Length: 149
Image 1 (spheres, helix red, strand yellow):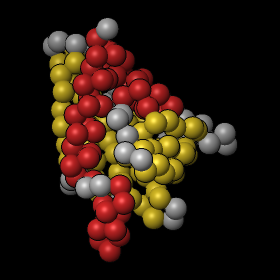
Image 2: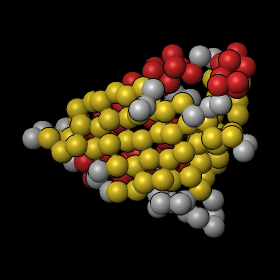
Image 3: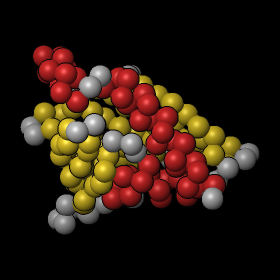
């Protein structure tokens, strides 16, 4: 079960939202924490198994992450796992549901950090639940604005 999930209605086709979300190098446009993503040249995405490096910031703290696409089902679902070094720390997913007026986009985050690291990591980069709750809401609002414009 995800630790956080939020849904927003968007007056645009699910395929449009999928294209925005799965274009991970653009994630810095939507996310308040991710400042950019670069696909691995050997496994460019957005395809299952594609790998990437993410650049993130929270306040004055900046850090890289590594990721791998788990699901890439156009117009339906896009998900990826995030690693910090050798540790799996998160699972992110986006689900798209067609509606009469466009679609609903659901963003979910599952905390995969080992419990022993959660407290020290929260001390350095802030409370993940609070930060990600705000981040998910902001990301969805920005995606909606981009898709509807």
